[in-house]
Image 1: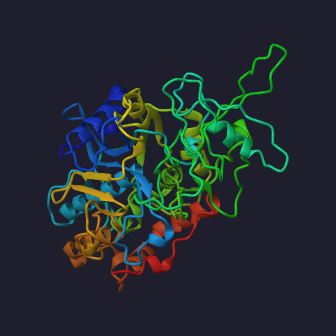
Image 2: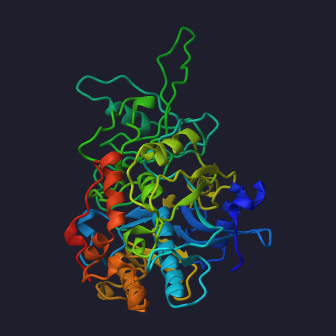
Image 3: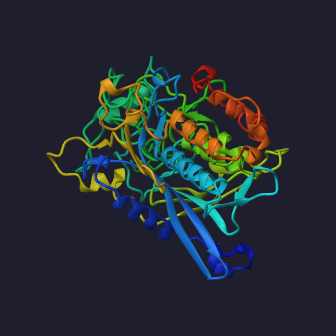
Length: 499
């Protein structure tokens, strides 16, 4: 590959056009087969992608290529997690896209260690280590603000709301005030063509997936939040008491997230308006039934900004962690200040990281192009008689690999799998921990023993062993958690002891 000198290129080659990136990702999605895609004008989903950017000075060009794409809005409950690593725990689009990128990186490392032509890696200084080729970088695209902290953003009057404004009532005697919100939500809406989601008080289990963004319109992926009698998490626009003219002046409010604060830290005050949420805290993705153990996408993106998105396994082979230089968000409710807080500021003070790791703050951009299967677009296109609007039950992964680039899943397993096939390789997603681990072991087996990184020369057996042996990564992880995220839940070891 020609030498690439990023710093010597004209400034225009170092710029990222957010609309160009969004268009590239949407076009890649359009080329995929129909299987697993939302039903038009009735189902919605979210999309995320990893884009490889190659800047070459000799040809004076910048090449942008989607190397991984994911859709999805769901994750499973903790009791459904497999100690064998066979189930895909988190199927939010951002996580799907990142795990697909891992598959792509394993393929590229396999080519590199086998003496082939990798378009990504070149030998590094340390024995058995590799680094990105000069001029190669990666950026991240998501069609909606990530769930969790990045979703707690101010409501702008002009933004389309998923449900009508609700008048905030004073607390009734013997009530914490939530009953008033519930009652207002159930009252007929004066706007035409706007449906107020009905309350789901007793339904705790869904047939689609235990822990998900099911009947509601967002389950933590940003702007719109489920209505629940238990938590009163209805997206509202609170109003002050009538003034002398009898009008209700608008009180500032925020978009709600369905992601729940981790235990041991600040809880959400649940106050009207901007005081509803605590900000800057770790959050777990929500479920309609049992809780999940999956951290919000805001938290994961912030973590990748320090530890890299390559994970502990690939850190064995890399001299430097891999970071997203840019994060692009599609058209949706968005706040630059909140994105900065959620993805960058929370970790900006982390220090004393081992060699190869740093705090890498991505450039944050927003596109003016909306995902055609977003909730907002689905609501606009929905017609009477089509049935209730709902999130798509499937998750799609596509990555630029030679073998089996497409992986469609539902409920953590391959889409359409029968109960009889559960527990077999036919049921497993190519993105589950076990499949990723087996791909990594194939990479290790393909590496000449004399060229193995030192960290892989000891006797290692389980998935847990290989992750813990990635010492620099574990040191960086310890520094991040102790300085920025002390409440980050520890993984249950018994879920990581598979081979």
